Amino acid sequence: MKEIMIPAVIAKTQEELDDILFKIKDSAQLLQLDIMDGKFVPNHSLDFDFRLPAGKYKFEAHLMVQEPEKWMEENWEKVDVIIAHFEAVGSPTEIIESVKSRGKKIAFALNPETEVDQIRDYLNDIDQVLIMTVHPGFYGSKFLPETMGKIGMLRKLRPELDIEVDGGIKPDTIAQAYNAGANMFVSGSYLIRSDDIKGRIDILKSKINTLPNEEDRE
Picture 1 (tube, rainbow, N blue to C red):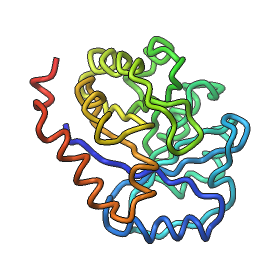
Picture 2: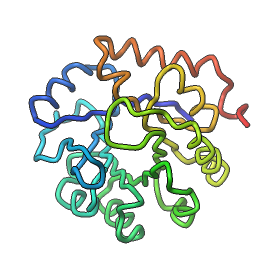
Picture 3: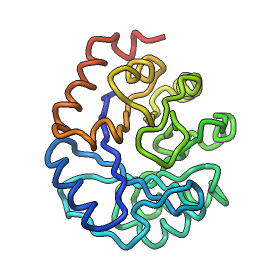
Picture 4: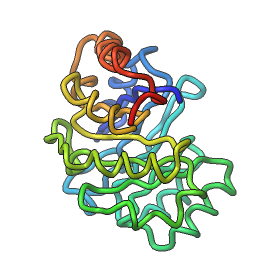
């Protein structure tokens, strides 16, 4: 299973979004858009009718909003993957079917306090799971190593699942997430606040390239 590094984008204006996308340039193929409504989390990001460059990147929308279904209905064409926080979803089955009927991928995100058992019944119907390794809403939040157990549990329940981690992913934490079973790594402040995003992605990759392959991990 391929390991993927994903820059996380927080922006409050179109100008700020454009500046970040220009800064990322060709450093990554998949970007995470952090959508925040100031209600589900105490911050705002991309809660306006933003524009994205066509064909340059693939985008996943991390919906940190109270009504992920509403956002999806209005904006699904902009992105390739919808990541809805399970804590905010009204009907898991309905949003899975609705997203898939539009030809998009669907994922559930779990806050640090949310247990894997809550999504166990849906694991065969979704494309990936995002484990929050911080309390969501801001760049630079503290990494929570106690969330690693959920990654291992998911990997045992569905070995081929794409498992994404988001929050506090830096050179000193990425090995923990990789060893736990994650294969997709979202990094916000460590990448976006750097003047050399590609160089920092290479550093993250080098940290896991020296570790055992997935089949060798326990």
